[in-house]
Image 1: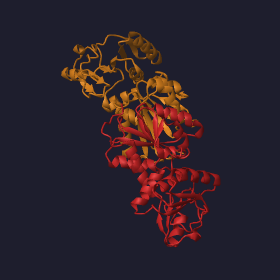
Image 2 (image 1 turned 135 degrees about the vertical axis):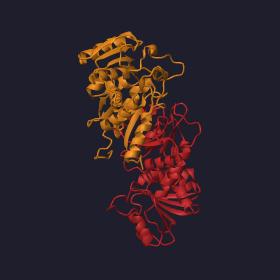
Image 3 (image 1 turned 120 degrees about the horizontal axis):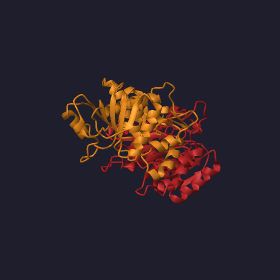
Image 4 (image 1 turned 120 degrees about the vertical axis):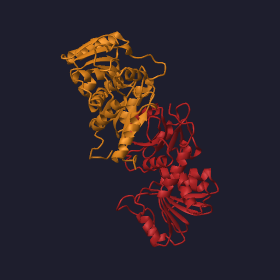
Length: 270
Length: 270
């Protein structure tokens, strides 16, 4: 029976949380692996975040949390330590408990993105990438693209100064990658990435100029629902290869399961 | 899949929590009924209770909690309303969320005890009962025995003043029941109840004088582990009928599921 008094407890925090995919994905993973563990979706109002966080930190048997919008930055600031992937974007999407009861942050947005591309045999090293979206997930993805050897990244965001700041930081961390702010136009690029939420809702505009798409390009959308966004439909029509949003999540789940050490042998929640 | 982002979330709070049976029982019930709901065991140190409680109250999609040792009184004091069953013992073992976000308390210890006896066709009305143990669960059971029509209750507790206080309160609430403090001796009684934890551990003394047991008596132990306590073994040896602790929990689970309205139609955690 999964969910006894001895269960390892993990929390998925977002506001709202009902649309979140990771609780179901994790509970299915626990079920498959025969683990007595639960991933619990929880939500709180932004005004209550401090109170919520203190309370969940006091819950001794909560071993880890997955963090989503709008709490990634606030949670990062609560942590006593962090992997460089989280520190460079000031944003936690996963935290695990340290022996002293405090939290250690990591961020697997970019990791899941890259692992999803690799699993589909998409090459990143040496490629020129248009990336639209320099927000939370976008920042994580841009660093990981540069780290994976992208030759060039053209960054675009509705907030031009946010894009410029990210380009500067990524360029400083990975000087071999040419990264600069530019238009949302894929001409001259090998890969076009939508790292914005534009396309989640019917009637959304297209996130980038699809008239510039050519059949040699790969188009990636991080949106999971709908699985086939208007951008991906346009990309297929233009003869491009496409990559949907689901693999990014699936590979994040794998990375988070390792981070949480869900299969650890020394079980018992005390 | 049970445990998606839309799951109804319930918490079982105790310290420690790993021995608790209700999380596994509830998760099995959710599974059987095909509900996307989780019962999450959580624990916190007594010094952190205030912080924990504020945080879980801020978690908007936590719909209810089961409370066990040592938090039943502290939680009762946090509630904005309570059923008489909880109010008369100043103790909550279940709370549910009210529309304004505050908590309403109930206590099903005695209810489960009585329902378990009824399901086994044990009569309570008109019976004389020796009850050992006037603590949290004991108080709840004594009220419910009186309410169910017990003719007489002889109360015994290592803390004599606690037993005397409870006898006075129950007697005032149910004047038709003769209730008084007395020795842990079943002579002259129809039913003997152990409502103490004495018998959970190997080497524990017997909670009552088993030399007074006779074959016409019913002996009830609320301890669930071991299922067959030394008291129940002695009772069987004396030819008594016995009632184990498990049914009390099983019937509490049923009562709590109704209290939480786990099958409600207007699902969606917002």
